[in-house]
Amino acid sequence: MSSSLKLIDVTGADKAPVNIGQALGRLFEKVPALWTLASLALLFGAWEIAGLVPISIAFPTFTSTVAAFVEMVLDGTMGHAYFLTLQPLLLGVAVSAVLGIVLGILMGLSLKAEWLLAPVFIVLQAAPMAALVPLVTFIYGIGLTAKTLAVIMLALPVIVLNSYKAVRHVNPSLVAMCRSFQGTRLQQIMKIIIPDASPVIFAGLRLGIAAGFIGVMLAELLITPTGVGDLITYHRSIANYAHMYAAVASIIVVSTVTLAALQWFEIRFLRPEKRKR
Amino acid sequence: MQQAARSTIKAAATNDEAIVQVRGIDKTYGDIEALRNVDLEFSRGKLTTLLGPSGCGKTTLLKIIAGLVPATAGEIRVNGRVVTGPGPERAFVFQDFALMPWATVMRNVAFGLELRGVNAAERKRIATHYIEEVGLVGFEDKYPHELSGGMRQRVGIARAFSVNADVLLLDEPFSAVDEQNRRKFQEDLLRLVDLEKKTFIFVTHSIEEAVYVSDRIVLLSPRPGRISQIIDPKIDRSASPDDIRRDPGYLNTVEEIWDGLRHYVD
Ligand SMILES: Nc1ncnc2c1ncn2[C@@H]1O[C@H](COP(=O)(O)OP(=O)(O)OP(=O)(O)O)[C@@H](O)[C@H]1O
Ligand SMILES: [Mg+2]
Image 1: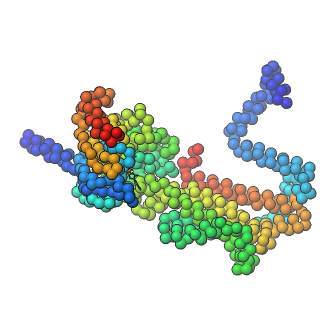
Image 2: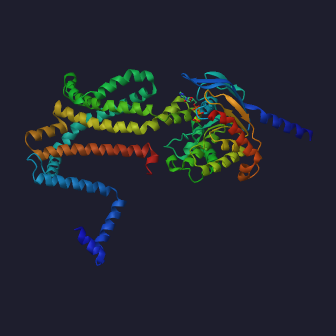
Image 3: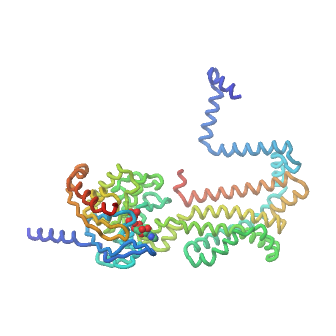
């Protein structure tokens, strides 16, 4: 293959393949999204081949998974499952984000708040949450509250601890600068501390949202068989592997898109200097 | 005629008046004694340099004057008033620039005014003037990471100028700048000192820089920092920069300071 290409190059008889290669190279440089597409194509191609071999009867091909996905969207089961899953997820993430950022910033700003709250969240973050999620059942039964609580249990600690560390690691020289120009404490917090901490706060938010997805899936797999988790469990139990894979893949896509959207929001509105890079 | 003579005398008197008075300042950090019994006066409209070995307390003294760090004992007076914290008559230029990476050059320069609640149009007018004065026209909408170290420090200097303080405190402003640019900066600084008629307190490590830019040099001893010598270089500043660096007064002062510092090094 490569030798034949070389031959063409040396003789110069036919430049066309080389030119196409160059044009393709330039196109990839101009539209970096093509790299993402190429990498996805590679992944799905490998998946398809692995499914065709097949490596296991419980491993469907890519195309049959897509077909199963379309089928579930059309018969409404997918829509209904997401209706049930996204409610506690959105609620839990919203509560964790607001509460987590506020508590984290407070802990970063005040030693008393730190002494009071830091140990709680450090223990919570270290605890194996998957084992604690079933506890929620006994306290709140099996409903929206239990699932929401599971999301909060997983999302809140990482958001709090990141916000707290972000505030603690604000550039002291910027704070001194603000003081030297007689900035008030409020100005210091709003104009220096929060903007300087925002990249780490957002990193925490991304981790928190990812943890929230884990929380809602754990709740649906372990305590309340509803929503997308139930879709997965149900299709596995009846050996409908293509449908099970479609449900799993769909939640991965939703979570990836959510995190990418958050990143876009951060760069668009909070750190304008990163936009130009 | 007589009146003119009297007014020049008066001008001379206000020129020599001490705008910043440092009285009996001690500073200890835990068990580290950084400064011991420092008494100093800084004259209005002059550039005074604090020079001394690393760790002798230059930054500490400057930050005490700025009101950013409390002294353990003693007091600072600016325009006769005792300093209890930062104030509008003093502005600080930071060694590490202290620019907000998320803000443009324009917003960084105008930040002191923004904190004071000056309206946007007025802020922009004043900042534009000082951006021009430090030679950053065309960079108003750039972010700090798009500037060189030298340009970043110009932003810091423009920010300090825009709040129209009487006293500018500069902590090794050119330490992150290469030698060639440093000379250019020193000349620019002298031009700004001339133009702005402000009092400058300047910290540096470099003897040559100190002698080149200062009206007065205060030599500090190693920790705990005490005043070891005060030198007033007698240099004709109207000469060209190269001539100044060959001026016998310049060379002798550099030598004198070297002699003063040598016994600390030995
Ligand atoms: N925040 C602090 N906490 C404890 N010790 C400090 C603090 N700031 C300074 N020191 C100590 O005080 C002494 C004087 O420090 P300072 O930064 O004022 O020196 P300097 O003359 O500016 O040195 P350099 O020329 O290296 O910048 C040093 O020994 C330093 O270790
Ligand atoms: Mg220093």
